[in-house]
Image (cartoon, rainbow, N blue to C red; front, top):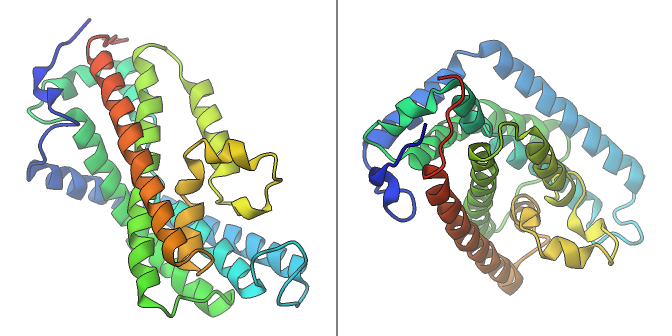
Length: 280
C-alpha cells in the first residue's frame, strides 16, 4: 500500500515544533524502564575501557612515547577512554523503520501531524541524553580516577570538541537514517546494516586512531565520512588536533553533514512514494 504525505515535504525534514520535545522526553523515559540494560551497559563500557587502556599501556610499556606513534602514552590512554565514551554517547536505534515496515505500524506514523524523520531524530536525541547522564558521565569519572585519563586544560578544546561531537553525531544519524530507508526497497536490510557497522567499526577511529592505518589505506578513508564521527572529536579533545587544523576538519565535518543530509532527503522523498507495508 502506497502513501503520499505532503506534510513531510518541507526541506529538509519539516519545521521544528514543541511537540518534538515530547518525543525526546518519552524516549528518555523509555530508556529508564530498562534498568538491567543500564547496568549491563555501564559494566560493558567499563570492560571495554579497561581492555583498551590495558592494551595501549602494554604497548607503551611504561615509556612516554613509542616509535611510529604520534601520540604520547597519556594521549593514547585518554584517546582510548574518550573514543569509547563518545561511541557510547552516540548509541542510537537504527532498525526502527525496517521493523515498522514489516509490521505495518509505519502507516500509523505517517498519519501523525508531525515530520516522521524529525520524530525519529527526536527519539534518538532522547536516547543520547540518557546515555550521557547514565553512562558517559559516570564512566568519565571512573576513567579519570582509575585509568589515568586526562581532561584538556585549554577551554577552547571543550568548545571545539562540542562542535565536532555534534557534527559527528549528525553524520552518524544521517548515515543510520539513510541505511534504514533501504527498507522501503528491500524486505531485509541486515546485510546493509552489517556493512555499515563494519565500516564504522574499522574507519571511525573508535578502536584504532586513523594515524595508525597504513598509508595506502588513508586516501580511501579520506573519501568516506566515518573518521569524522569519532576520530576527529576525540583527537581534538585530547589535544592531538589543534588550531587551524581543527577548524579545517570541522568545516569538512559540516560539508559531510550538508552533503549526506541532501542525499538522505532525496532518498526520503523517493521512499515516501514507494512505501511498501508488510504485515498489514
